Picture 1: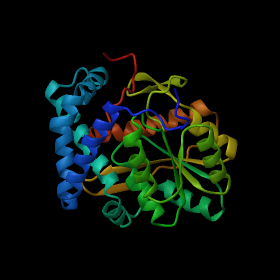
Picture 2: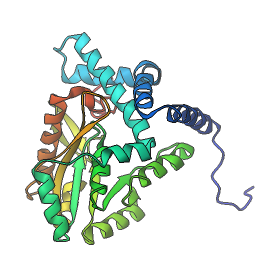
Picture 3: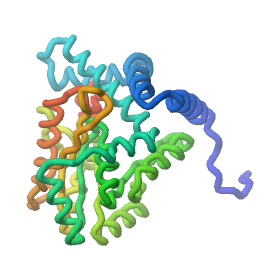
Picture 4: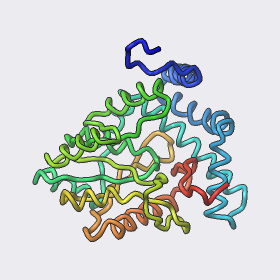
Length: 296
């Protein structure tokens, strides 16, 4: 019998996972910034990644894309990707220190001038990227320069972890919107008012169109391009590339994608990300199921 409340049922497994994760995050946050970033990178590379199956998934993806590369080389890329994922996680929880560092990054590239021009004219901009480097460094650098950079997020299945995960995104400044009808209405309104929005496009979407990515078809959402066409918004690929010290970033905005049709535009965006992955393979999140059904 219901007690009349709308409170969801207690989920012991999710609660314990969140408890462990919060404990590790809290431990890392007690360390000086540079130490904590290196520590969580190491933890993801040596402990969490292998135990959670992320390392195996990364290696499977690398074998699919580059079967002729030596195994030792693919293993090195997988470890670098895990390290980058761990660093990204704790950086995003280190809001004050991370945003302070990002504020000192001067964005560059032809897309930056286009972004400034669009802001001055109160025209909407959709900034599109992949899970590469730490994309939040770019958002933080732009927010520090007065841009109203909104974000779109997908609620996690673990509601306990999701509660503080959402708070970390909100802390970067700029509005954030959940996927779904309410969130869509919010970010469309934000764009119509001349705001900017960040969208990540490089995860498998069942309803997406199969576009070539690193030599294999990958189901890709066309929504970023469709929205840009609908709202007459600039569509600008952007990247925050981790620097050799493992702590700093170079923020680059590519030239706006010419308006044509959604598929053509997303092919251009995909090629832009491909170029970054080829140049810095260890900075892309190989742990995602990007080619669902194509790997074991």
